[in-house]
Structures are given as C-alpha cells and as structure tokens.
Image (tube, rainbow, N blue to C red; front, side, top):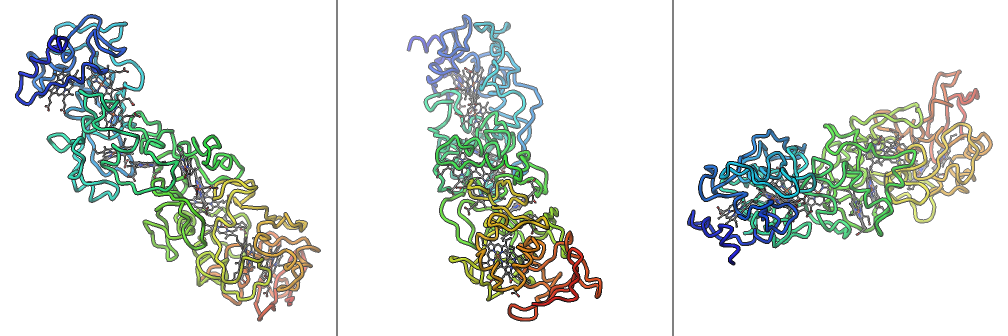
Length: 530
Ligand code: HEC
Ligand code: HEC
Ligand code: HEC
Ligand code: HEC
Ligand code: HEC
Ligand code: HEC
Ligand code: HEC
Ligand code: HEC
Ligand code: HEC
Ligand code: HEC
Ligand code: HEC
C-alpha cells in the first residue's frame, strides 16, 4: 500500500471524480517504473502512472494523458470482405500506439523535460510481439464506428447493442484497442477485458456459425489478432492453404494429410494470395470449397453437399449464384461453369468447358451428377450402382492411391481418382481404365453386352474409352439423343470425317443398336452399324 501512495495513484485519483484506483497496473508489465515486474522498466524512475498520466502539465487530453501522440501515417487493415470504413487510428488506440508502434521513446513523457531513462539501454518498444509497428494491416481493425448497421450488412456480426458488459466501445461508439484490452489490469492475461480461450472474446462480436470439427474448436487455431502473417483475415500463416496445411500435413493426429496431395503433379490449388483479386475463379484455395467456420463431419450422400464443405456458396444447376450450395457440383460450378477456363484433357468433336451444361438434366447424355441418368439399360454397372444412382464430381476427381478424400491432388492427368488412359492406342488392362472400372464391370464391357464392338475396339484395336466416350456429357445445344447418346463424343486426335459422306456422327438406332459415320486410323465407317 505504501508503494502505491508513492507512485502517485492517490493524487491522480483526486484529479477527477470518475477516477478509480487501478492498482492492477502495479503488478503488470505496464508498470514501467524501476520497481516494475517486467523486463522493460526505468533505470530509476519510481512513479508508475507517469509513463501514461500526469496530474499536472500533461497533454490536454482525457485522461490527463502524459505522452506525445503519434503522428505517423499508419497502414491500416483492409480486405475484400470488410464492411467497416476504416481510417487512421484515433482516441485511446493512439495512446496505446504511442508505445506499441515502436516509434516514440517509452520514457518520453510530457510532464518531464528530459526523457525518462530506461534500464538496459532500451528506448523504444523492442522488436517482438508487443511492437505492432506502424503497419496495422496485419492487426485486428480499430478506430471505426461499430454500429448496428454494420451487423445488418454482415450476417457474421452481432449487434454492438448486445456486447458483454466487459467489452466496451468508446464514447463515439468506436471499437478501439481498449474494447479488447484494459491497460490497467492484466488479470486475464494480455491485458484483456475478459477471460479468453482463443474464442470467447471473439464471439462477443462475431457469429461465424458452428463447426462440428473439434480440431477447429478455437478461433486461434487459424487466426491471431495481431501481426498475422496473412494480413487480410488475420490468419496464422501467409496464405489460407498454408494455414490449413499447418495441421493437415500429417503432423496432427486425426487431421487428414492434404499437403501430400498438393505436392502431386495435378493439384487443385494455386497457392494463391489470401485475398485474391476478383474474380477469384483462377485462385482455388481451401476456402473455395470448404467454408472454414461451418465445416462438419459425416458421410457423403450423392447429390447432397458433404458436411465438410460447410455453408459454402456456389452456382446452381440453372446458373444462378447461391450463397449456400446444396450439392458438391454447385460448389464446382462456381469456377467450372460459366466463364470457366478450358483445360481440355482430350480434344473432342464437341468441345465444352462449361460442366454445368454438360451435366444438365436436358443434355443429350450425361453421367448422373445433377439428375438421375436417362439410360435405363446400363448392364455393366457393378453391384451397388444402378441406373437410378447419382455420382459426384469427386467420385472421378479426387486423390489417387488412397490419399485423403477430395479433389485436392493426384498423380493422374485431369486430377482423376484413378488411372484413365486416353492415348490412342493403349493396351487394355484392369488398371488402364481403373477409373471407369470402379463402377462399370470390366468383364461386362469386354463381353460386349451393350455395344457389340467394345471388345474388338478396346482389346484388339487398343482403342481407349475416351476415343468414343466423353466422361461428362454433351450439352443439349451441341447434340441430341439421336447423335450423342451413350456419352459418345469422339476424340478428334483419332477420329475424323467419313471420306464417303463427310459425316462424323454416331446415330442411336434403338436398344443396343446404332451406327457410325467416320474414319478412324484410316478405316472408313460409311457407316458401320451394330
Ligand atoms: C501503460 C499506460 C498506462 C498506465 C501506466 C496507466 N494508465 Fe491509466 N489509462 C491509460 C489509458 C490508455 C487510459 C484511457 C482508457 C480509455 O480511454 O478507455 C487510461 C485511463 C485512466 C483513467 C480514466 C478512466 C476513465 O474511465 O476515464 C484513470 C483514472 C487512470 N487511467 C488511472 C491510472 C492510474 C492511477 C495509474 C497508475 C496506477 C494508471 N492509470 C496507469 C493508460 C495507462
Ligand atoms: C508507456 C508505454 C505503453 C503504453 C502507453 C501502452 N503500453 Fe502496453 N506495454 C508496454 C510495455 C513496455 C509492455 C511490455 C512489453 C514486453 O515485455 O515485451 C507492454 C505490454 C502490453 C501487452 C502484452 C502483455 C503481456 O502479457 O504480454 C499488451 C496486450 C499491451 N501492452 C496492450 C496495451 C494497450 C491495449 C495499450 C493502450 C490501452 C497499451 N498497451 C499502452 C508499454 C505501453
Ligand atoms: C478485437 C480485439 C482486440 C483488439 C481490438 C486489439 N487487440 Fe491486442 N490482443 C487481442 C488478443 C485476443 C490478444 C492475445 C493474443 C494471444 O494471446 O494470442 C492480444 C494481444 C496483444 C498484445 C500482445 C502481443 C501479442 O501479439 O499477443 C499487444 C501488445 C496488443 N494486443 C496490443 C494491442 C493494441 C496496441 C491494440 C490497438 C491498436 C490492440 N491490441 C487491439 C485482442 C485485441
Ligand atoms: C468488440 C467486437 C469484436 C471483437 C471482440 C472481435 N472482433 Fe473481429 N471484428 C469486429 C468488427 C466490427 C469487425 C469489422 C467487420 C466488417 O466490417 O466486416 C471485425 C473484423 C475482423 C476480421 C476482419 C474481417 C474482414 O472482413 O476482413 C477478422 C479476421 C476478425 N475480426 C477476427 C476476430 C478474432 C479472431 C477475434 C478474437 C481474437 C475478434 N475478431 C474479436 C468486431 C470484433
Ligand atoms: C489447428 C490444426 C488445424 C487447422 C489449422 C485446420 N485443421 Fe482441419 N482438422 C483438424 C483436425 C485435428 C481435424 C480432425 C477432425 C476433428 O477434429 O473433428 C480436422 C478436420 C477437418 C475436416 C473434416 C474432415 C472430416 O472428418 O470429414 C476438414 C474438411 C478440414 N479439417 C479442413 C480444414 C481447412 C479447410 C482448414 C483451413 C481453413 C483447416 N482444416 C485447418 C485440424 C486443423
Ligand atoms: C479452421 C480454420 C479457421 C477457424 C477455426 C476460424 N477461422 Fe475465421 N477464417 C478462416 C479463413 C481461412 C478465413 C478466410 C476466408 C476466405 O478465404 O474467404 C477466415 C475468415 C474470417 C473472417 C472474415 C470473413 C468473414 O466471413 O467475415 C472473420 C471475421 C473470421 N474468420 C472470424 C473467425 C472467428 C471469430 C473464429 C472463431 C469463432 C474463426 N474465424 C475461426 C479460418 C478459420
Ligand atoms: C475457386 C475456383 C474453383 C473451384 C470452386 C473449383 N475449381 Fe477446379 N480448378 C480451378 C482452377 C483454377 C484449376 C486449374 C488448376 C489450378 O491451377 O489449380 C482447376 C482445375 C480442376 C481440374 C483439373 C483440370 C486439369 O486438367 O488439370 C479438375 C478435374 C477440377 N478443377 C475439378 C473441380 C471439382 C470437381 C470441383 C468441385 C469439387 C472444383 N474443381 C472446384 C478452380 C476451381
Ligand atoms: C462413380 C461411378 C461411375 C464411374 C466412375 C463411371 N461411371 Fe459411367 N455410369 C455410372 C452410372 C451410375 C451410370 C448410369 C446412368 C444412366 O443410367 O443413365 C453410368 C452410365 C454410363 C454410360 C451410359 C450413359 C448413357 O447415357 O447411355 C456410359 C457410356 C458410361 N457410364 C461410361 C463411363 C466411362 C467411360 C467411365 C470412365 C471414364 C465411367 N463411365 C465411369 C457410374 C459411373
Ligand atoms: C464419371 C467420371 C467423371 C465425373 C463424374 C466428372 N468428371 Fe470431370 N473429367 C473426367 C475425365 C475422365 C476427364 C478427362 C478426360 C476427358 O475429358 O474425357 C475430366 C475432365 C475434367 C476437367 C478438365 C477438362 C475440362 O473440361 O475443362 C474438369 C475441369 C472437370 N473434369 C471437372 C468436373 C466437374 C466440375 C465435375 C462435376 C460437376 C466433373 N468433372 C465430373 C471424369 C469425370
Ligand atoms: C475443389 C474443391 C476443394 C478444394 C479446393 C479443397 N478441398 Fe478439401 N475436400 C473436397 C472434397 C470434394 C472433399 C471430399 C468430401 C467427401 O468426403 O465427400 C474434401 C475433403 C477434405 C478433407 C477430409 C478428407 C478425409 O479423408 O477425411 C479435408 C481434411 C480437406 N478436404 C481439407 C482441405 C484443405 C486443407 C484444403 C486446402 C489445401 C482443401 N481441402 C481444398 C474439395 C476440396
Ligand atoms: C469404339 C467406340 C467405343 C469405345 C472405344 C468404348 N465404347 Fe463404350 N460404348 C460405345 C457405344 C457405341 C455404346 C452404346 C451401346 C448401346 O447402344 O447401348 C457404348 C456403351 C457403353 C456403356 C453403357 C452400356 C453398358 O455396357 O453398360 C458403358 C458403361 C461403356 N460403353 C463403357 C465403356 C468403357 C469403360 C470403355 C473403355 C474401357 C468403352 N466403353 C469404350 C462405344 C465405345
């Protein structure tokens, strides 16, 4: 108690009616007097409050502020998602920055003519976590009005009217350093205004939704409020991908190893910057497919969005943007439908990079991604599959060789889940067309149950499936049931027009019957039927 008298708290308390006696300072790192508990303290100065306040002769700012205010132009926080309008720091944030930006001597107080000498030759805030610098673009935004209208604009924000009592905005309704911190009390650690476990303080204001993934239980698993390596979104690593794979790299038990897949020859990740320019289409990253705050766990159901995508946006079967996708394909359509960049693996008679049109329920033929298939007669389907089944993009596009589930990376061209030879000619083996043989019985195909020429072409002539079949579908604008049933869409590397008729065409004539006009490796079909 005697010590407290000496530090001048009593005189400060008398300077204004509202002044309490924040004794918590004395035992905290904010006691910069010679007797302070921290490493950073004065050589001989014994007053505690003086580093921030003085009863007389201080700067004319409440609360008897005793320090020069920084005049630095700060780099402020910014991101594409930010709704608040930020300006330069104001109010109490500037007070904190008068030490924490590292530009003003800790001992430079207004009430003394000379600078208070700190021990160990320290003058300004030393390099380290406590020195935020003048670049605040990697720190939680401060000095903006947190009004109810902000919460109306951003569904992920709570109304400032419902803040817990410990969390306070300043008199102007602005969020400041002092909204989260109390310079006088370190009882919660880090001078925080309330107990914080990495989440509690954050969810006073943010309503991000809920996740069933226990490994993501804390905001601090992915975010840090200060000096965040990503800048925008305050992530713990430089990019979204790096943040996620800091755990998903085989080092954390239970967290699937995604890094191994990203290192494969065909990876679905551009390692893009954290806040890529709009449109983000060419910048696939983990959060293109997984909404980080609402991811769940559980099993997949074809046609229904897997819980581990979370509440992610996409484009629906009619081409309209949706804020919450309801199937996996809708997530992919965000980038692989309208405006997608063509990356053909096989050059085809009918070229199309809009996968939405290829799989549309009205398309000439299609694998059943968006709706049940329309061929009632697919004898090759293996047990577990039927003409009523639906398939997902990720049934074909996923990690090969038993890696983590999902469209992350594969050694196979086209980011395919299993081998699929497209080079004409290719020798038929179980493994050469392993992709198709996941669902279609090899023996059935090679026994010519549907197409009487399957075995002759596939085995004898070593024609790959891709020379005749398009694994996706043929849009209604580019083909009809007569001309492009059965996923027939010839590869132009092997197939050309019939020299007699000039036609390059498949015609379905009925059940398990059709004819082709074309020329293949110099063999004219003018036509050939089955
Ligand atoms: C490291 C800097 C620092 C130290 C040391 C410090 N304070 Fe403060 N104090 C502040 C800041 C910053 C504010 C303004 C807070 C705000 O606006 O919410 C403040 C505000 C106050 C207020 C006004 C509260 C109000 O509601 O207006 C009182 C009283 C006060 N301090 C007393 C003290 C006393 C007594 C000491 C010494 C035991 C002390 N402070 C030490 C930084 C400090
Ligand atoms: C007079 C200079 C000064 C002012 C003004 C000041 N601080 Fe500090 N602060 C320090 C010093 C010195 C440390 C100790 C740094 C260290 O040990 O690395 C510190 C430490 C901290 C810490 C880290 C505590 C911990 O447990 O690691 C936080 C948080 C903090 N200050 C917040 C604030 C906030 C918020 C304000 C404004 C309300 C503020 N400071 C104003 C000098 C100041
Ligand atoms: C939205 C809440 C929030 C705001 C606003 C905020 N901080 Fe923090 N700050 C935190 C949290 C939470 C921690 C503890 C981080 C941890 O333990 O990992 C922290 C930690 C710190 C630290 C300790 C070093 C570190 O990186 O952990 C300092 C110094 C600090 N804050 C200063 C400030 C200053 C100065 C401002 C205003 C420019 C400010 N803070 C604004 C939440 C906030
Ligand atoms: C006192 C309320 C409050 C607290 C506590 C708080 N925030 Fe915020 N935070 C906000 C507001 C308001 C914004 C501005 C949102 C906007 O304008 O879109 C914001 C912005 C952010 C942003 C940037 C959003 C963007 O669109 O770029 C991130 C990231 C963030 N907060 C994370 C956190 C984390 C992590 C914590 C806990 C350490 C936390 N916040 C604590 C109110 C708070
Ligand atoms: C701090 C470590 C950590 C970080 C960072 C992390 N994860 Fe995880 N994640 C885990 C753990 C552990 C699990 C295991 C499941 C559980 O805990 O419920 C998991 C599970 C998951 C799952 C669910 C898998 C399932 O069971 O279906 C997905 C999806 C996922 N993480 C994606 C991500 C993405 C995307 C990011 C980056 C935005 C990320 N994770 C960042 C630790 C982490
Ligand atoms: C598994 C990792 C992970 C966890 C856990 C996590 N976040 Fe995020 N958060 C991210 C990533 C990654 C982004 C960037 C989103 C993007 O790329 O679009 C983000 C973005 C944000 C944003 C800005 C975008 C927006 O929607 O407003 C806020 C605010 C935010 N997070 C707050 C939080 C809070 C609060 C918590 C804890 C309740 C939390 N986050 C937990 C990974 C995570
Ligand atoms: C944010 C945009 C985006 C989303 C969403 C997206 N992709 Fe992609 N996709 C790309 C980009 C960009 C590439 C090019 C490869 C790269 O650099 O990442 C690509 C490449 C691919 C390739 C490889 C093509 C090749 O020949 O190499 C496949 C297959 C693919 N995506 C399938 C999917 C599937 C399936 C989904 C949904 C689960 C999906 N994509 C969601 C942007 C996206
Ligand atoms: C994930 C399971 C799955 C995989 C992998 C798969 N298919 Fe299918 N396929 C089906 C289902 C289910 C149908 C039935 C659709 C119907 O009844 O119209 C089907 C139907 C077909 C049809 C007939 C379509 C029609 O409209 O007549 C052809 C041709 C076909 N598949 C070829 C292939 C080829 C070639 C591959 C390898 C690239 C392949 N499939 C891979 C599940 C699969
Ligand atoms: C039945 C298996 C199968 C399904 C289901 C499937 N793909 Fe493919 N996809 C392939 C094969 C095989 C190739 C490469 C060979 C080819 O073009 O025939 C390919 C190529 C691609 C390519 C690169 C070529 C291009 O068209 O730009 C992209 C991107 C792609 N698929 C995205 C998707 C998306 C998105 C979905 C779901 C909406 C999907 N795929 C569903 C088998 C499939
Ligand atoms: C193109 C879309 C896409 C991108 C980009 C993407 N994922 Fe996935 N992810 C998926 C799909 C699809 C699944 C499988 C869902 C299912 O199980 O049906 C999946 C599953 C997962 C799982 C669960 C795997 C398992 O076997 O349990 C984790 C963990 C995961 N993703 C993390 C990540 C991380 C980390 C990133 C960024 C490096 C990422 N994903 C990027 C589409 C994507
Ligand atoms: C020379 C062209 C050609 C090649 C090569 C070819 N197919 Fe076919 N396929 C057809 C035709 C034509 C039909 C239509 C049969 C009918 O009338 O129903 C068909 C039908 C199918 C069907 C649907 C009926 C059924 O049998 O279940 C599947 C599945 C199929 N093919 C898979 C494959 C696979 C897998 C490969 C490669 C291993 C392959 N095809 C190679 C021309 C070809």
